[in-house]
Image 1 (cartoon, rainbow over the protein chains, first blue to last red):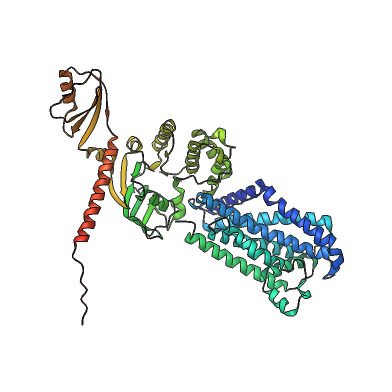
Image 2 (cartoon, chains in turn yellow, cyan):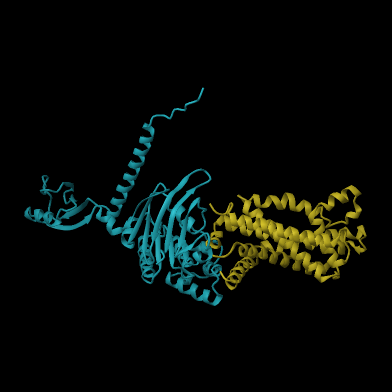
Length: 257
Length: 327
């Protein structure tokens, strides 16, 4: 396949993925917006007023970037894990596996499909958050870099989960038992400076803390962590997961008999 | 000229140690209409799976129009269209989207892909259903959808795994007609089938696979010449005498108006007609008792099983190997 043909194949997968989550928007786009609206009402308006300022901002402004990032990463992950596993389950993945589309194009197509859903939900939640509070933009570059890298990372993680999963239960184990706790302890609702020193160190081992804080820095200009290390860590993470995913596609493990 | 498909020493051992293919080699020439026959579990679908890269081979080589599927997978796959046995499309997608997407996976520009999709959906009588989700189609329509999808990039080699399984007779005949048409237009076709009538009617050459081994690879004509006898069923207008006898031909009466005659290779069927005429028996109709290829196929599989049994027995009769342990 020449580059033009590969580009067409990539756009085909991406278009299919976007059409899929747009077709079932009631299941994919609406729920995160409603959930985040509830967070804003409860933690922002009702409780937030009593908490006071955090990091120099009102509590609702402080939690807004974390909530947006939480929606982005969970939706990027969910999109790829459910779409790729469904394709594997229904065997429609064979359509692309029998074609001359190279493995890296298949992987990029599904990954960018996840990124597209992560960004769509991120934009919707951001618009909704503006109803409750005012958000400034400290750095467009950092904000977009972090949101893109994070959604790529979680799309790739979703892809690996889908390859290994044998049942629909197995695609919800990681989000429920790993992703959700790490997100809640990832500095979405608080600054780690409030924690005892030991728990601050433990918290720094949580990768989601770095993503949430880097994103918050892009919007508000405040962070508990070093932004350069966060970006570097994300780039390394994306590269590692991309290589692992590509290896899974190449060996055909759990995809080809 | 390169073979449309060349398979050399193909083996496959699954993770559960099942040896599905034990070293198959065969060539299919361009323009051929080729049947792969074999009982359930013979290795037909495994072979197709390996060609289409959905099954990983253990060893061996496959070339499609001279392109090795391992070293030149992109070129090899462009020549290939596969219609699998099981439905393998997204049931929630629309018919047109399914075919358009497949065109995209082969790198066809969108406008051309649209034209190709329309062409094949119309040819397979699915154009009216283009906006229907695949799950709403009947079984026959789903099978035609898979054929349209496999043809959208105009492959030079089309492989169909049991294409007419579970399809009614009328639809099966129309699919045969369609396949003959695209074969006449130059597409090489390989099909696996359980309907031996299908292979006899459509194919020029045939390979018979049994227990992972190639039992026979020849033309359908040659294969049928190997028949030593055929059984014909006659329906007659008059009541048959209990003692019906046709000199030189074993006869078996089925009922008062029909009987079977065994005709060996070299015997003349005219002698049967003459003997019947002399006895004043008028014939209404005559037909082969069974599909000729089916008889051949059953004989071959039985022979293959006998050979396997003798090999096993020969191994079992070998004296046990004594291990000499130095003291």
